Image 1 (spheres, rainbow over the protein chains, first blue to last red):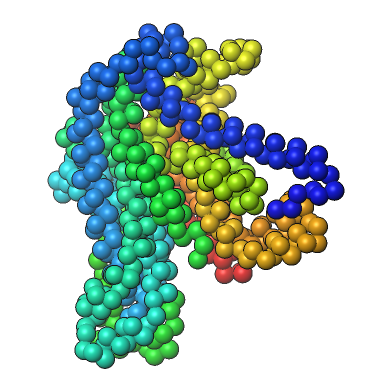
Image 2: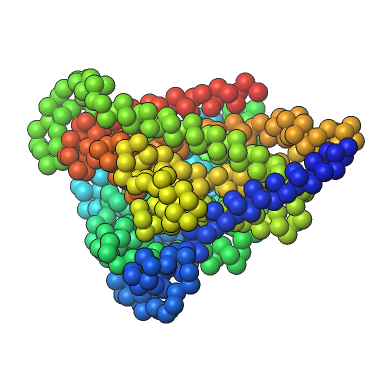
Amino acid sequence: MATARSFPALAVLNRVILWAVFLTLAVICVYPMIWLFLNAFKTTNDMFAATWGLPKIWHWENFSTAWNYGISRYLLNSLVVTTATVVVELSLATMAAYALVVLNFRAKAAIYTLILGGAILPPEVSLIPLFRVMAETGLYNTYFALILPNVAFGLPFTTFLIRAYMTGIPGELREAALMDGAGEARIFREVYLPLCRPILASAGLISAMRVWNEFIFALTFVESESVKTVTIGVMSFAVALRADWGVLMAGLALSILPILATFLVMQRQFVGGLTSGAVK
Amino acid sequence: MTDRSDHSRATWRQSLQGWLWVAPALLFLVIFVYGPALTNIRFSLFSFSAMSLDWDFVGLNNYLRLWSDPKFTTALTNNAVYAVISVTCQVGIALVLAAVLEARIFPDFSANLFRTALFLPSILPVVVVGLVWQLLLTPTTGLIDQILWETGLASWSRAWLGEPDTAIFAVIFVSQWQWTGYIMALFMVAIRAVPRDLYEAMEIDGASGVQQFWHITVPGVRETILIVTIITILGSLKVFDIVWVMTAGGPNHSSEVLGTMMYRAAFRDDMIGYSSTIATVIFFIALTIGLVQIKLQKDR
């Protein structure tokens, strides 16, 4: 971007202001998490006395208390639900995308619209009937009650992403394979899937983040500690520990530690993956 | 759509194969999204509770009742305020921030660091963000109050989440804190796709950064602006979790949004029919926004 060449002083001033703005924003965005982690080591009294400072005594036991309070189980449940959702969702979306890109069939445009259309409907509009279905089929309070709707609500965007990527794969590859006598299933598996690896990674990451953070289904469709995911887990955790901020904050810190660690280690891939689909 | 094979009409045999490939995805959507959404509309015509066996058909009475419910007016207003503030921050401000970061004003290393820092809140679960900010906003002991005290602005101190005038704005603020950086990163990707030489040409002509922003960046990412605006408005319509965690619609229903109002009606007050009515309103607003998006995208 051009600086105002004729007014060097102004240009310098602009630069200083921009630095100040971005530094402030960066601190505002990051500091709450640092505050969370530092205060997770304090007792409630220390915290009230000095919310800014480093802990005088590092109370590591806050973390073990929180861990034993149920955070470990919630994390495990989230892991199960997230993994299952991502695997099923990616499989179905990739199959649908393959057909939408390479196969010729009737009502194709209408079907694609129907799949994409799901993206505009918020979970609220299906919540009450879904709740009844879960109750009547006995799925209520099981992992399936979370996995199935999570897959369904994630499919539109995932299919969109994968389809857009597949249109960039030259059709000649498939035609050559057809000549060699390969069937669609084999072309899908041996030609398209390997080529789609980058977009599958991105779509999988987006979907995993969405499911890991999902709230309204988890709030509505499960109630036992043994199936609660971490988002709902920390809610009940927070209610139970209103008075013990140190342990509460240690619990919150533990609950985000897996995501945070992954993000900090692979932030380039993370930002790249989560923003794929920004341009067509 | 791809055109490779579209000009020849598919035979039934060919079609069957295609349908089999899309069937699993389609089935999921029909069973868990579209089917329930339609059932929900039917529910809205009845008055019943979760356990009741007999349903009273009440026609559009639930809608009339909703229309005269002051909480509904509050909720709609809050959703609208949510949308306006979110579009301003997450489309307007995020785009400006993205343009600055992509303009090579900062050294690459710092620009990258800024992007990571601003992006960070978006990877956190909304629940954790809500709970942490609840602690930060606690009167006297919370960080925000302490900052106000230290900087001599003690008179500004208040129970941000506990007062009807400020509760919804505090929640909206936290939402902006969480998502502006994410949208900024989306815009950065879009800006990178704008041809570099356009900027260089304008720079040779002596155009300022602001002029370049309006004449190259904004038109260059118009498509992304449109999509992000739609996503942001849809997001403001369906917002539930951050409000539920931080205020649960309180105090005295002042921060109620359609989502929390619907959830409370169904799962706290056991008025399933009434709750379905609110969900149906959400459905039709979402549908309208979706149709507007399709229309706008066709126009270009």
